Image 1: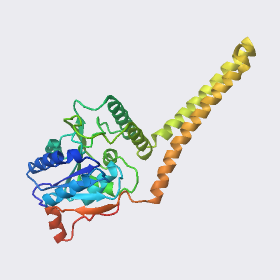
Image 2: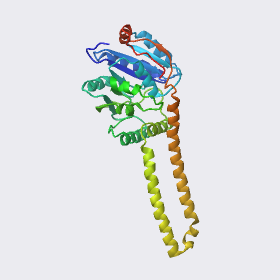
Image 3: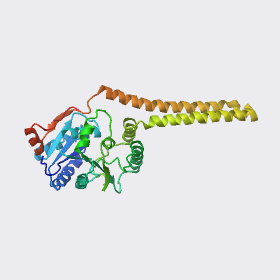
Image 4: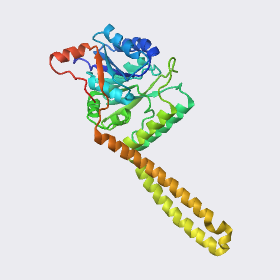
Length: 333
């Protein structure tokens, strides 16, 4: 790719978005052409089963030198699909975008302009969100957790319309953990991070791939793969419960002396309540510890994040890089 201006790669993970693909391609390619700089579009099919795969392959044939499609052999999840796209990207600036068109591709130029100002990561804040109430609530909880655990005070970690400088992406690709959350991981390697407001639209076609259960699983991923704060919190809670238990025991002793054992059924129900409380607290602690141990187990096995089944198309920039032997090659991640 040309060195006159920073080149741009747009990476879009696609999973069962057949109805949105034609408009997605038309709007994204138009936004990229308006950049007036070298660009490429990489679409990662994350094991779609609704005909999206064939549509993406056809798009790569129809847009030689602009669109490349990576077809994964099964569904590996949004973030692993994005990392797969990063591994094949040639651009100096990398943009991620969802395929559901809730975040407009027309905002790509604004993200690139902000990177040109010297920022390493540019996030986006969804204005006038059109999501259902439960999604807004979960998003707010996730954003609060991430801000508390990372210390990076961004407002919207859930929006995947984001821009990254090449060195940040290379640092992320060097990390080998199986479970990750790209917006948080990027902040570990970025010096200057900012956000810009972007539009947000209601999903016009298809259904969301994030159910309530998926959102809950995402929160567990955040808790266990990005921070040890829950373990530290449990330690403080345990210390607090121990202190309260000592105080409660002293109070029971005083009341028994003053009123006798009959006032509380000889203390039987009180003991049951205390016992059940501690049993519940132990189960919570064991559950969280199990999550950490399970993720350690997954990382030790070092299984691939994804396997590319087939690559369709190549970009003009990649052709030039191949000629001098510098092109990235898709790999088992």
